Length: 115
Image 1: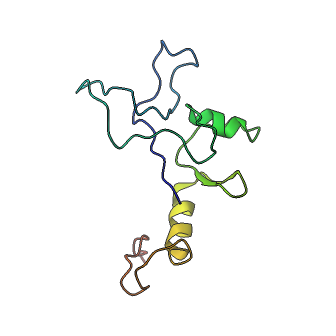
Image 2 (image 1 turned 180 degrees about the horizontal axis):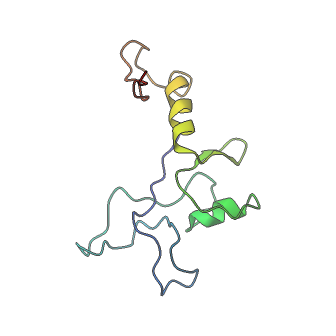
């Protein structure tokens, strides 16, 4: 499993692809610090090194552009883009995904439900 991190700001008016798009751009500098953000990565899930999140969706003939995305590298498709659903999946499948903690020691990613 890998984790790709998009830049926290969307593309500007001067971007040739358009404005307001999420991008994977580890070389982009933050506005306030004028430095790159080490947590930002290039896109690796699809093995195509897409720059824009929109490109991942377009490969599946979707006009969606939102984050987060849970992408299945083996089947080469988006599994989900609904954050609550992704958290539920990761929480219930932590062991099969390679978590070395026992179920008792592993933190529960889902908050307690209010009654």
